[in-house]
Figure (tube, rainbow, N blue to C red):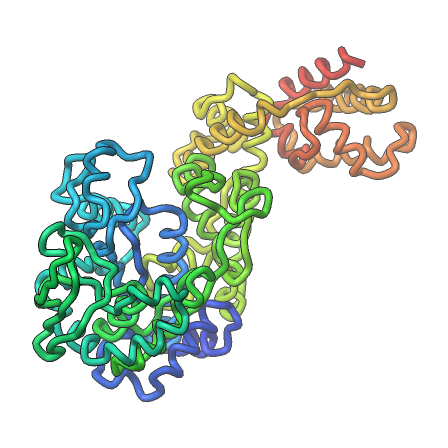
Amino acid sequence: MTESTLSSALQEAASNSKAWPFLEAQRLVKRYREGKPDGAPILFETGYGPSGLPHIGTFQEVLRTTFVRRAYEALTGEKTRLVAFSDDMDGFRKVPTNLPNQAMLAEHLGKPLSRIPDPFEKYESFAAHNNAMLREFLDRFGFEYEFIAASDRYNTGQFDEELKNVLAHNQDILDIMLPTLRAERAATYSPIMPISPTTGTVLQVPVEVVDAAAGTIRFTDEDGSVIEQSALGGQAKLQWKVDFAMRWVALGVDYEMYGKDLTDTGVQSGKIAKVLGGRKPEGLIYELFLDANGEKISKSKGNGLTIEEWLQYGSEESLGFYIFPNPKSAKQLHPGVIPRAVDDYWQFRERLAEQPLDKQLGNPAWHLLRANGAPEGPEAPGAGDTLPVSYGLLLNLASVLGAEATSENVAEYLANYVGEPVDSPELNQLIDTAVNYTRDFIVPTLNKRAPTETEAAALRALDAELAAGNAQTSAEDLQTKVYEIGKDEQFGFENLRDWFKALYETLLGSAQGPRMGSFIALYGIGNTRKLIAEALAKA
């Protein structure tokens, strides 16, 4: 199959795919049926507020946007751009309690984030520090993007023409915004916020447009003096919803998604963009994350799961896999979802190579493997890769080892199981995260109960079968032996599930567990017999 044939096959499959990134991409294609008028690439944007460090919400928004971006490229064969925009001209509203130099920061409340000293004393400003962290964060995950800081555009005059346009339509924007505001807020609202020439703070005061074409405005400063000054060159900042719209028009943004909490912002900003002579971008409104209790995640409550915590217990790919499905449905985000996400990701990845193209495009692994590079041809690199054991099996092995579990001894067991040293970076990562997860979440909950009389009899039978075998017995043969004992009527199990539950609770100390044949092969027949002996000693 030639390269052009591959591309045609991919585009045809993409045009019929019901996977959500392709549905979004198909909608974006309809935006410009004859192509973008100026011939420029389709522009995707994600926004970032640098009052805090990048977090899991930042990751999911950039990743989901990238899914749509790659889907659009597969569908059309066209190049695209992704801009990560930092709103670092926003006023500093509250001092986060987890930052150093609290007193210094408190002195700069109200000023643009880009004009506040860095509390970490590493960069020229607080925003510069957090912008650097954002770029480091995005680079860490291999995202392809262009970074734009609001302060650069405002201060250098690159937004000046857009600011004049806002001033020229000041009343039109007020007509859109004032009906949406409470009376108290409406009394001080202005689409443009001047920066005080005396204190440097971003002012929330009524503004009179003196000369829109020249960019001149008049307002009352904090000390009561009436000031007439330019709004250009970084001497003013637009209100959030107006800034959102202005940015869409100024940059020519074609696609931007945002959370459900910004639904109203999207509506009002879309109206303002139209007033400014532009067009609201296409986009998806996604649901927000919930904690283990189904409550909205709050930074102040600390009831969420950070990306650092996820990566301590699972892989980047597993996080992406968990994020992928149903962006319009809320997802609970807590450590308990990680093991399944890891194993499900690898199952989907293994299945990918055997799937026809139309099924591949609905496979989350296809999108994840292509997220940070769009290879020619329909199949993503890494499709069909497999691991010799599941994450769940590694968790069971580590839990049996208990407090003594280390990456080194788990790797030794695994090397004996597969017959060669573990040298795969992905497998080594899986081992490290399994040990971490077991230590923090499984070992503290383990409780091996004593077997009942009939369960003890079944365990003795299993022990006898293992004693008669040898170290080379395959996992499948071991599984068969376990099955046969569970089906033997003399032991009185109503079904195999009861037998396996007894094995998990008496040998492993948990209500759920692995495929026992694989576990015995991995842990070793001799070590498994020791577990049985310990359980029988309690009978």
